Length: 252
Image 1 (spheres, rainbow, N blue to C red):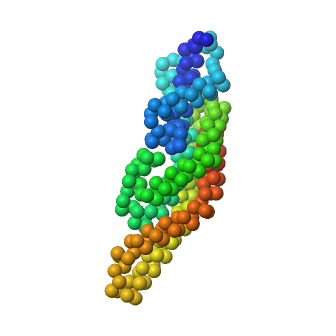
Image 2: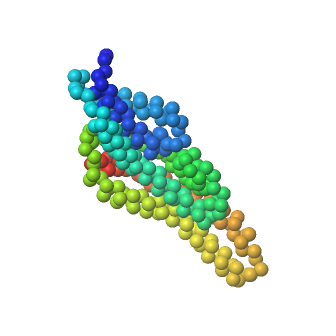
Image 3: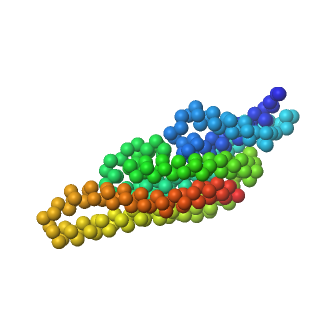
């Protein structure tokens, strides 16, 4: 089976969009995934999706300048679609950072391989647990289905979806608020702990509140986070299920 130049160009455009999306999904193509694995997964997905995007074998090839512009558009579209997945995991990172802010874990920041940047132990626990829930709920399948539907919503070498910019801004604010809401139980527990320690310092000045507060706040934070998981797990499920819909919302 011979492959025309136009078909090869269409295949490369599909591969470009897929790679731009996968780079924003930590469980599929995040920075902790080796480059060879990411490229291999992108090629496999492009081969699977290519038959639905096959161009006529006798079609005229895309010019060099037009092809460069088309590659740029596919990168923008893929980045826009992948940003929805990035927002979901970003909300989880915000929740982990907010939880660890007053617990004392922020003083010992370590590299987080799931996000490719430094974070506290709360970030590690929360993000890795969320990634596990993402895979258990077949979130990766929903992402791949939404990725396939983007080729119908925005054909290859098509016009840029300028209507999705408003949805991006609105959804960003929603996900930031979601991250803060997930962290509120732990933040409230730590606030009450600080308030109690402050009252204890006023009542009994001889007590070394600073040295007493460090282990107490760690224990309170761990207990509050364990209790929060029971409430957050169902919310994470709905968050990941809505992620695929938001991916399409950005390009409609």
